[in-house]
Structure formats: structure tokens, C-alpha cells
Length: 296
Image 1: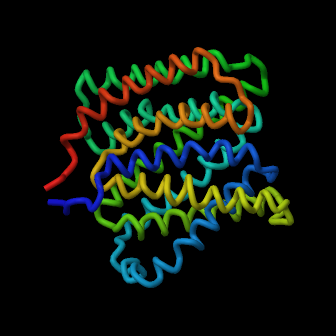
Image 2 (image 1 turned 60 degrees about the horizontal axis):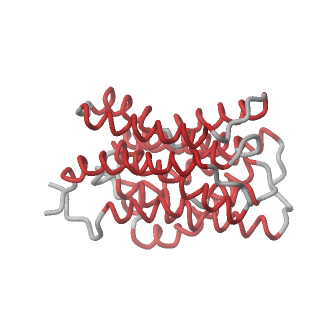
């Protein structure tokens, strides 16, 4: 029996969704290449986590089994290439289209959870996922540009979606046996190492970059990552990857609103309608999953 969580995992999930909504905006504002943005995002995250990990959790490294090491390394690689492809997609398509496609995770999470973790889903759960995905497509419909560049950006975002779902599925297995802090530190470290070799192979400059870019790198580390993905990792101990994937569908709604105020991207009626449909599907799914949380 798992211990009672110190905070409601659904509250942690809500905070995570709000903070990750800033990710696409900060990436759009930065002028550095996609691989560099991703590398410094993870590097600064690891550096910020290191003091706490060193003082309280380093002994847990000896307790990690070989299988969990393999899963953690795989999760780190998946996360690294998720960031690379998603950040790159933002160079070709809008914040709305990119965030919509990259958060279509239920399609992948339902299949992955079924085959790898033998999770069973009722017709109601599947229907709620279809409703939310339909809302996502409505948001993107008014924003898509049928051209080579926009289509390439859409494809990159969709592949990034598959990669982040794999990252969550690997994590769902490991985090039940390893503390969320240790797991997160290991995964982010593996991801940072992967990104370092990626930018090295591509010949991208480690620096210098404008002061504003360094500010965006640090903000990406603190908000979308430490208060976003890290909370998702923590929530995996009590919630399924499918539940988290459903909640992340709220990101396009938040990102679209932020893009309107910060990047002057217009909000279309299709985005408002799609956002409402996403919320409806999300509430149906989360109502079903809520009784799975161990609150004793």
C-alpha cells in the first residue's frame, strides 16, 4: 500500500499544467537554436536540483536496480529528443498548432498503457479521450497552414508527442520503486548529457548568447521543468500516465492565451470552442480516474 501523498496529486497536476503552458512562449522568445535551448533548460534544471539531491537523496542511487537504470536512461533520451523536435516545430508553425499536436498524448498513452502495463479502459474513458482529442483538432483547424514549412512543423510536433508519451510510460514503471526526486534527477541528467552530445555533433555553439536568452533558459528550468515536468513525475506515483496525459491537454488552452498577450498571436473562435471541448473530455476522464488515488 502506497503512503498518503502530502499534497493532493490532482492539485500538483494542475500546477504542472499551468507552468508548462509557459514553455512554448519562452522558447519562441529565445533566439538560440532548438538544441541549445533544450540543453540549457535541462542543464540549469540539474544544477538547481543538485544541492538537494546531494544532501538528501544521493544514497538512493545504490538502491536503483539495473532494470530501473535502463528505463530511466531511456526516459532521459526520449525526453531530450521530445524537447529538440518540439522546440524545432515552433520555428515552423504557431504556438497553438504545435502545443495541440504535442499534447495529443492520450492516443499514444492509451495504447502504450494497454500493451506495456495491461491497463484496462472502459468505453467511457476511451470516449472522453476521443472528445478531448477532437477539441484539440478543432483548436488547430483554424490555425493550420497547408504549406511545406507548416506541415513539417506539425509532423515534428506529432513525433515529439509520441516521444514524451514514451518518457511518461517509462517513468510510470520506475517511479513506483524509486523516489520522484531521485528519478527526476537521473532522467534530467541523462537528458542533459544526450542534448550535450546532440549539439556537439550538430556543431551548434555553446555560447555566447544574448542576456535575454540566458534569462529564458533559467525561466524554462524553473517553471515548465521544475514546477512542471517534475510535478508530473511526482504525480506518477499516484496517477497513471494516461491521466497525466489527459490533463496536459489543457496546455494548448493556456499557451494560446499566453501567446495572445505576449506574442500577439490572435485567438480564433475555433480555439475557444476546442478549448471548451477539451475541458469537457478532461473532466469526464478525471472523474473516472479520481477513485484510483490512494488517499488513506
